[in-house]
Every structure is written in C-alpha cells, then in structure tokens.
Image 1 (cartoon, helix red, strand yellow):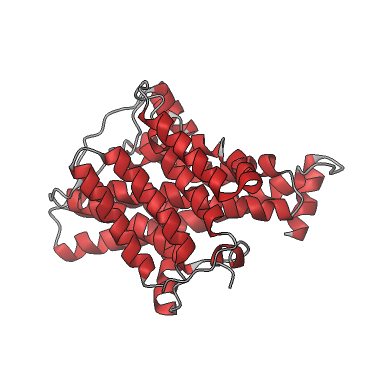
Image 2 (cartoon, one colour):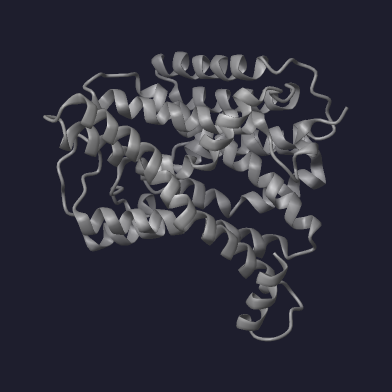
Length: 353
C-alpha cells in the first residue's frame, strides 16, 4: 500500500488539512486569550507557527513534484507561483493597516511606522531591515519567504539522495542553528530545521506504507506539542521546536489518512481560509472585544464571530484565489519555448486552465 503522500500529490489530504487547522486555531486561540486578559503560555501560539513552517515545506515538496510532472521550468515556476500566493494578501493587509492607523495587535496602541518599516513589511523582509512588523502575526512570513529560496534545491537534493540525504541536510541545518550568529537579520537559522523537517517528512514518506491508525495523527501532534512546550519551559525552545517538527516528519510517514468526513470537511474549510484567518484574526478580535468592549455581549461576540469568519472568506475569494490562479497562468505563459508576447501567452494559458 502506497503512503498517501504519493496518492495525494495530485489531490488533497485530510491529515494535512487537520494539521493546518490545528496550527491556525492554536494561534487564534492564544491571541484570543491574550485579548481577553488571560496569559496563556507563549508555547501555544508558537506551536501553531512552527506547524505552519513544517506544513509549508512539506506541501511545497508536493507542489514541486506536480510542477515537474508538467515539464514546466521547475524553479522559475515555483518562485512565480509562491510570489502570487503569499504577497497579494500580505501587501493588502499592510496597506490597510498603515492607511487606517490600525494597531499592531488588539491591546497595542497605534504607533506610526516609518518608510523603512512599511517597505520591509511590504517586501516581507523586516528581519533583514531590522524593522518591526506592522501587525504582530506578520513576523513569521519573512522566514517563509527566505526559505522559498532554498526549497526547490532541497527538493532536487531529496530526489537525488533520498530521505537519508535530506536527514543529513536537517542535521547540517541544526548544526548551523546552534552556532553563534548575529541576531535579527540571521534569525532564519533558528527555524531552518523546522522547514527541513517538512522536506524530510515528504521524502521519508515516499514509498512507505502507513501502518498506524489515523487516531495517532491528532495524538501524535499533541505529543509533539507537549514535547516542545516541555523543552521550552526548560529554556530550550529552539531545540524543542526542532525536535517537535522532526517528530511530525516521522509521524507523517507512518499514520493513515483521517477517514471521517465529519472531521475532514471542517478541517478542509479552515485550511482553505487559514492564511486569511492568520493575517486578519487580530483585527476581528480588536473590533469585537476592544473597540466594542462597552457594548452588550451579543454585539461584541457577534462582531468577533462575523469578522473572524467573514474577513478571511472575503479575502480569499476577492484576492487570494484570483491571484493564485493568475500566478499559475503567468507561470504557464512564461514556460520555456513559448512563442508570442506575454499578453498573448496569458490569454492562451487562461483558455487552457
């Protein structure tokens, strides 16, 4: 029996939707508790972001495999499609936050960002510019963008050397991560093993039968989270994040798909809108629980629910999905050997999507 990473390289995975849902809900829940005045452990929100790092690199291995099967230029297609995937919504959020003087988070006062900060946020390279994110959740996106530069080459290395070679790359990333480095601009080294764990999980799963029952997937995710939280409480958050993500990589290869629609369907919906939820949820919480803090509870919680659901849905259908499709058409139109101008090729690509 083939592992589902091969079966789902062209379709969908309930397990990965569950994982992405767990990531965004942990971030949402952590920030909601903070907005309500509680003090949840920092590990809860960080746990969700680390899952995003692992999940991103794993599913992008699948994307690279699909691109390779189309005979399109692998690296150029990858970069074009990722740019159209991540930048449009983040740019729109930065523009709205700056134009409307929105705070960085629900309990933060407004502070005007400078030109360098706005530019760094628009380009998603705040860590390189040593600038603060205009919204708290934006801190993680520069690391994803910077890892994009390496992921196609990690994919090619995995194809050439298999999971053992990728595990060697993970070990190398961990060694680099523990070496002394300049904080701020080069903090990416702290998270590279988390991304590499997703690459490892993909290649470790290829051709491997998944023998464990699906229930081990949520249990294993919880156990990995507990491992991270435990090491973080001992002052070893970085090592805990690496161990957690590598554990997810092994787990991914061994557990069968979630078979129940009543679990898979809501996870699929949450996963579809997860990027929008991640970028907008702080302002749903700010509007409902801070701006309307003196309003009746029904208005406060109704506003929170409506915006928590409505903002990501609107963002997805008006911006995310159209730009994802456009990125696919641009990549297809720019494939090697195409004739005619870019405009003609885009029209041709659009007709065949």
